[in-house]
Image: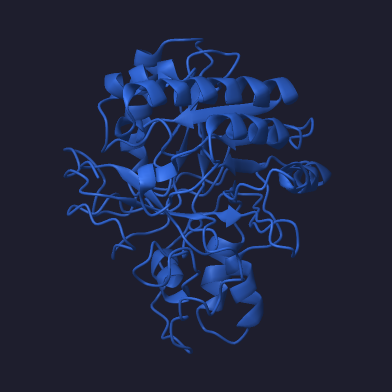
Length: 381
């Protein structure tokens, strides 16, 4: 894998996110909502009343090939002026209309561990936050109903869901999260069915993490075909629901130079208002918000397209910035970042989102995608 690449580990349940599976149980797994962005003051350490969960102790049963825990391989040292190693400044409380799905691994743990001394911190700082819902299993027969379950639940509360279609063929270039649709024709049909579940309310779509930034593993022909399919996906999603806001993969500030990433995004249709509302960055990563803001603006400037194109940033675990050694797997010393909101006060930055749910392991503190309370508490306190 190339240096500074982001990769997804697809094992177990959602890693860094909520997940929606076709597994014969409740139609979707997801989690958290909030009505304000509180300041998260440091709390004293609390001894664990129970040992850290085993890899499967707190995860609900789910297909072993379904949802993502991302990693960063050999990320370069943070640029001068970054907040790496220091807790990121959090802004004032800001109202948000983002949706918290009522079910998730962290909520399962909170409900099952009422006496754990870590429970209050994990519940208030992680479980009570809105987070994305991933659709990472290729199940064409049920995808419409499962997407509709999320969007209709959000609409009933007057809130905005964040959904992540994650089924592109050759996903993760044969790495830990390999899988997805068998071919682009099947993917295009799956996207059609995904779009049919979007409803008519506002919804944020994080379209295929890594599909653009990691596309260098593909030969030129298949890469061009993937980009054409992504451009089509954006058009289909926006045609199905004109209020859908579709964002394309910009990697993160420690990966490709902005002009290079913008050139890839342009080929994938991200500069067209018919397909795109802009870009997303830092999904399941740790780069400081200030670095991502600067990077995303440079990408957007190089991308061109309508002035209205913006960016959303995954702030779920970036409160202390990226580890200086580039560690990607549940690195120590990280912290929650800014709480999710669609009101950032920053030009061209449309939202701070929790695309990855904090506390779901990358594979070192627990099995990939399982909720690990000791890790969650370390991030939250």
